Length: 138
Image (cartoon, rainbow, N blue to C red; front, side, top):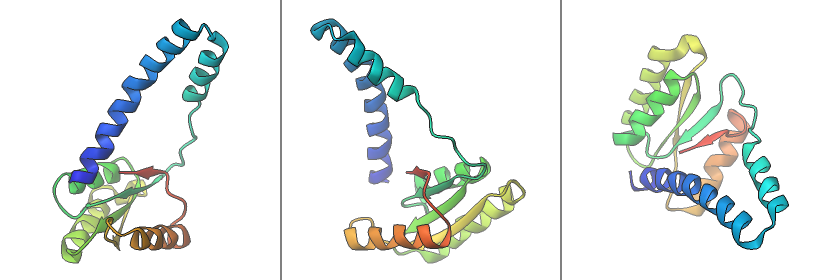
């Protein structure tokens, strides 16, 4: 849950700091061209596939579970990351399939301790090999 909170906090800070940075850059340095370039880069959006692949850390319980199910409801292929509770992760995967399987949603349980760099690297290598490139990380 701590990781999810940190990710959400970073996203909020990024949104706020972008607008502040854009205003301060154009007003303090007078470099309007640089501000416009940054603004245009921020506007470019990645084309999302019909069923994006989302990795949700700690998805076997709590807020991670809720986020995984919500992404599944939106039609994502959700990688349900867990550290120790495989049965809970399998329940989440089954719920995703039951609720949104007709939309192409899929739940894939994947064990990895996010505190270990080696386990995270191995998890992403396995995801790329078995499911495809990751579009969303929570």
